Structures are given as structure tokens and as C-alpha cells.
Image 1 (tube, one colour):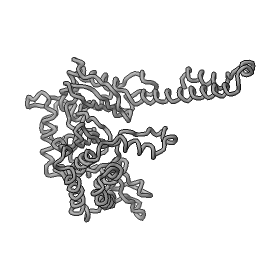
Image 2 (cartoon, rainbow, N blue to C red):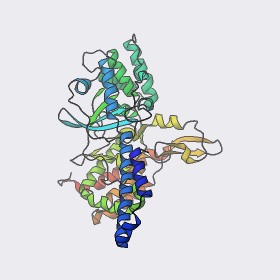
Image 3 (tube, rainbow, N blue to C red):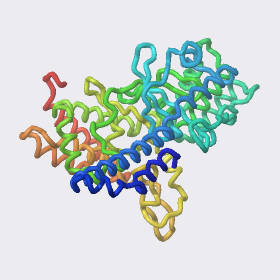
Image 4 (cartoon, rainbow, N blue to C red):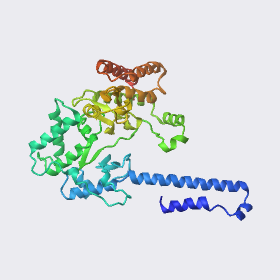
Length: 432
């Protein structure tokens, strides 16, 4: 605890009003004064906790210094490097980080609102204070090594992407896409600095998914990178609900009140229907796509974004994982209960208690998770002639299982029925 805060606690707890002063003040004033002291103490504690949390979470200056140091030494390259390190036309603004090891900042670049994302390893964050000495992680850019041929680099990429998305017939197309992305200056060649940068980026799950889903309408667009720092488009509304109560405030903030606030702040129902159609289209896009299937492993409201035109965007792909990644995590994993067979927040499989091993099939499919979310988002304020049918279809959708026997025809039927129901209601209106 900082010295200033210790002195404040000591003053409040051990230096009460003198008895002479208390005798001259009415008892009610003394009570008010004590309440004021208590309020100051609580407010000081909250401010200190917020400052500590911000200092721990927001280390954008560390990212920038490390990236620019590697760039000046010629280790890395990228379209963003010059703007970030020389021209200073890309500067971090508001901190949006939720993890100390994954820095996220809003910024403006080339007159566009963007997000800047960068990773910091535990060893690089320092252990004592925000001003701790920086330590460079040289292993981050140790591949490929000098002398690696283009064919060898292509083979490295093929092997890595095969592990990431599984054996796919279109894997060579994905490799070509990554190589094209690595060629920053468009000279038809990949320099060692370019190769090191793109290899470091491929260690970030979100970047792999961004490349794989590059041509999908509802996935975020990659705008540039420098080393393992990358820039994506920024979406105006970063969560489905505008009010998210912090965990420390939930005991004194009733859930019913937050629900009422979110319903009051939510867009008009036709606009919510438009966002929903986009979300359902994204579920279609990641189900048996050209590079395999992908699971949504955190279907919470804060992961769902939409722009000013109320078009859905999955702006944060951190919660998405390929089928190969999830099954690789579950295969051979020992367990005592189903909770031990969970990848991410809610990609759960069953536990075979006799064998004490996880099964590899995820129990709840993407569509069922999304429909559970939509029950809170779409039903309130729905038109009376639509509500009963909509409620029935969402109920059916939520009960879908992840069994292979149900995954094809049944899922497609439920999804298309939902989309058709919503589209009929808003088509030929200003909301379509």
C-alpha cells in the first residue's frame, strides 16, 4: 500500500475529533462528519484500485517502445512502422485493454478511426511498477533464420497453418494469402524482416483468424502491422449492450436495474433485427467455411459489435477458435467433470468419467449460444404479431445440440427460418 494511502487510513482511524470539539457540535453534525470521513475513505480506496488496475492493464508505451526499437534495428518491418516510429502519425489514444498481455488502444490513422493491438509477454511487463526497466523478448522474432529460402518459409507456413486450422484442401491458398500479406512493399519478394514480422503475428490466434476470414463481410479488416503490432478497423459500438456493470459494483447494483437500463438504451427493434441478421450470417460464415469450421467460445454481449449503420461486426476475434484447435485441446485431456473439458469460456465437451478423458465433440453449437444471447436482445419490444413465433423459434434454437447428426440440415433450417422471419418484417423499410 502506498505511503500516502497509509497516512490517510491512519488519520481517519486513529485521529478522531477531540472531545472538546465534539461537545461543542451537535451529535447530528458529528454523525454527518463521520459519514463524510467514511465516504472519503471509500472513494480513496476506489480511486487507488482504479489507478492500480489502469497502470497494470494499460502499458501501450511499452508496446510502442519495444516495436520501434526492433524496427530501428532492422529486425521487423510493416506498413505501420513508419507512421508509428518515424512520422508519429499513428499515436495511441484511449486504452481499451482487458488483459495486461494483450494491449488494445483506439487511435486515428490516415483519417480513419482504428484499433491498435499489441502483445506484451509477462517477462516484458516488469514485476515492480509501470516504470520497471523494459526487457526485450528476442525469441519473438527468432524465426525464420537468416538463410531460410522461400520454399522453406512456405513449408514452415504450411505446417503451422495446418496445425492451426486443420488439414484443408484450400490450405495452399491460405499460405499464398499470408505470403502476399508479408510482402509489405509489393516488390514480389519477402525480406527477412517481413518474414519475421508475419511469423510473429501468426502466433496470435486473432491474426490467424483475421487472415482466414479476410473475405467475410462480418469479420474485422486488417489495415496494417509492424512486427507483432497490428491495426484493425474500429467499430462504433463495441458491445451488444451499452451498460456493463463492473464486477466490484454488482453487489450494490441490482441486475434488474442494469437490464432496464440496457433495454432503454438499446436501438429500436427493427435495428436490433438488422444486427441479428448480420450475427446469424456470421454464424453461417464460420460454419464449414473454406478453411474449416470455427467455434465461438465466448458468446457474451461484449463480444458482439455493430457500426453506425447497424451492421453486425465481430470486431474481436479473440473468442473464436478453429475446430482443429479446440479438438486438439480436448483430445486426450484428463477430466473429472464436464467443466474440465472447457476451451475458452463456453466451448464445453462432455467428460467420459470411466476413461477420465474428454470427448472431442463440443456440446453446444454456435447457433444455440447466439440464440441464447438473442433472447435477451431481441424479444423485448418485438412487434406483437411476431413475438410469439419469434419466441418459439429462439426456444427451438437454444436447444440445438452439437452432435454431428444434427449439425447439417437441422441447424441450417433453424437458422434460415430465423433470418427469413426477421427479414420479412424489416424488408422494404428504411431499416432494410
